[in-house]
Structure formats: C-alpha cells, structure tokens
Image (spheres, rainbow, N blue to C red):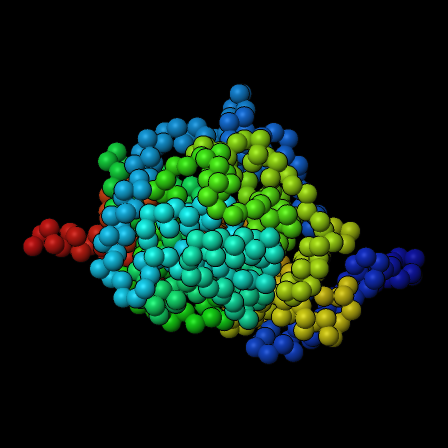
Length: 548
C-alpha cells in the first residue's frame, strides 16, 4: 500500500496482503492454508503469525523443608520456615485422612467376601511391574495364602532388569504370570504425551483395561495395584473428600468408584484403539473390584528393602533410572519438565514424604535425576511423537481449522511435512467450531482466540455467566481448572478436567448447595450452562417432593 506525498513521490505504507516473514524468510500463509485444507475432514483454515516468547523454565530455587516439593511446582507457596502450603493443608485434614487407610485384617475380609464371586482358579490379579512396591505386595499376598495371577504390561519399554525381576519372582514364589501387550501402545504413548505431557496416564489406562479383560475372562474378583500412598493423593484422594466433620469412608469409596467408571469412558487413544466395550455398563465394576495394596499396610521403605533382600529375589534394575522401571518414562519426565516447567513426579513424591514412605533427600535426588536427551529423542522417533518446535525470534505459526473432530497434531504435522518445508509448518493447531467473520463475511483475524503457553484454551465462543448460579459455578471451575477465563459453554473435560478434578468440583457444589450429587453429573453435564440446569432440576424436584 502506497500514497502520493506532496512532493509527488510514492510513499510505502506497508503490505496489504497476508505475506509473513519469519526467521528472515518470507512465507505465504495461503499456501499453508491450502496444504492444511487438503487434510480429509478439514473444512476451513486460517494461519496467523503470533508473537510468543519461549516459555521460561525456572529451576527450583527452594525445596520444601518438610516434604521436598520444589518451588517451580506451579501451586507451591512457602512460609518463612520454607514449608509448603500442601504440608500446612495436610495438617488440617491428616487425622480424617488416616481413617481412609486400613489394616491387613481388613484386606483379608475383602478377599473373604470376594471369594463368593470367584469363578476360576485365582483370588486376584496382581499388577506386577518388577519394581519394589509391586514385588513386595506380591510376596505378601502369597504369604497370606491367596491364589494370585500376576500380570505385567510389556509396553515395549520395560527395562530388562525389571522383566528379569518379574521372571525370577514369579518362578521363586510359584505364581502364574502373564505378560500382556497391545500393538496400539505407541499411539497410546503419543496421545498421553499430547494430552498430559507424560506417558503414565495412557500406560496405566491400557494396563487397567487389559487386566479387567483378563479378570472378566477368568472370573477373578479382585485386581490389586501396587500404587504408593503418594500416588493415592495424586490420582484419587484430595482434601475436599475430607472437608466434612464426619468423614464417610464408604462414601469416599463410592466417589472413587464412580470416578473410575467415568475414567474408563473418556474418549482417548485407549478407548479408540482397544476393546473397551466391557466398560459400557456398570456390570463389570460389580464383577471386578480394584484394591490398592498399600491402603492396607504402612510398611516403611527400609522394612520393604529388608523383606525384598531376605524373602524375594528382587534386584534393583541397573538399566533404568531410580524413579521408574519403565525406560520410556524418561521421555515422559523430559516432556513434562520442558512443557510444564517441573517434573511430573514432584507432587506424588512430596506426598510419599508426607506419608513417611520416602525420605526428603531421596525424593529431591530422584526428581533431579539427569535425563539423557539423545536417548529421549530416539524414543520419540520410535513411537512417532513429534516434539513441539521452538519458536523463531519469539514468533510462531498457529493454524486454526474447522472440522467435526479434533485431529491429532501428529497427523496434521505429518500431512503438512509431505507438502511444505519445515519452517512453513505451524507449531500449533487448534480446532474451532467455526471461524470468526466480519459483518462483510471475511475472516475476522482479530477475533481469533488468544493463547498463552501452558494454558488450556477453549474452542468455543466465550459467553459470560448469565445468572447468579452460573457465576458461582464459574468460580468453582476457575479454582480447579488450569484456565484464567471460562465461558458457560466451555467443556469441563476439554479444558483439562479429569476424575480427580471432578471430585474436587463436586465437593464444592455439594458444600455450597447442601446436596448429595453423583460425580457422574459432571461428565453428563460438562458445561456450566448444562450443569447449572441439572442442579436447578434437582433442587426443583426436591422442593416438589417436600410440598407433596
């Protein structure tokens, strides 16, 4: 665009096309949009060049003097003595939480009752990783006289040392054992990395799915996990469960069970690539019961090592890190640290320390264990994970597309890589229900949704709360979800909500309205608008019952 000045000269005022310049190279967004539009199912596209400084990854400057939680954990706050807010919070509900934990006699009673449902040769399946926790649990179950089938998911990256442990231990104890595999494992890893910045979420869900299938087939009534107590507080327990003065432990068990039902029905790589039809109804959860072994025993780490040294041929694997028996977990730790700025083990390890099952110094050492970046990149290539590319000069290409479904980034990137040079491939893809338009029907680029690193964003038009109820629910959503702004039509699950966040949300709702509501309600009505209508319906029904 130019203009004549008073001297009769043409003055250059700027470009009026959409050509961009990134890293010193001029690119034409129309060419990129055409390549993206050729992907099956993509209806409309628009590409923008955004300023985005690379996310700063802060090194931990301080570790909680009590539990070792690093200061780069996003919700960590420390007092003058260096103690974190989670330790202080735990003090307020510790005595209530202790009621959740039981004894080995309680475990024996569970098995006695479960034998009424046993229809085959085994009392339980033990999920055996070859690590110390599950190996100790297996030995204890054998000593208690239970008939056990050990199950190990071979995800393609279990360390040889861990697998040797598995083989030696089951042979020494005379326990039947099954190695399980699935050809979908690499895709499950990639999906887990893209959704959660770790490999564990997807791997655990595949493990649980396959073990339930075996339990149903062989009529085994119990599946035993070797999760640590720290992992309970990471995945199942939250302080909201202990808010009430009179803690109802059976009620907590029901909440966790209902959360598990919804967990198995979430649309992800496991549900798409594996047979999950057994979870379509609640019947399987009546047939098969999950039991966490370390809910029923408070063994210290020292006691565990003594037992392993004297009773079981367990040897610490030398071919993997101290924090895992699964080699690919190094990739998960690397991605989480790079994308989120802290180790994904920081939180559960801090809980292990609070619960007395790990020393503070040990937790800090394991969190800071160095990762071989070259080894990680080899694993990325093997499973087909595409690492988000770094921005150039603080700028990046972002592509928006309209389609009927979310398309995995790896599929879009691979499609674009066949048609364009790497510097023209967007660093991020975001699906929209529709592109924003001006009154003249042109794409309104100024109305495209903003995005900031490490924040989950919505793909729907923002609509503010319209009622007092929606305002209250919005406050609850914002307390729990990793977002700074939420509209009444934003989806709880798409914004990062999971079963644990659902438990936290329902605790707030029940406290505010003095209602006893099922956790399933969050998943059936995942937006504030829908959830508010559901609450109003419940209240209306209660009032109607009272009047009648």
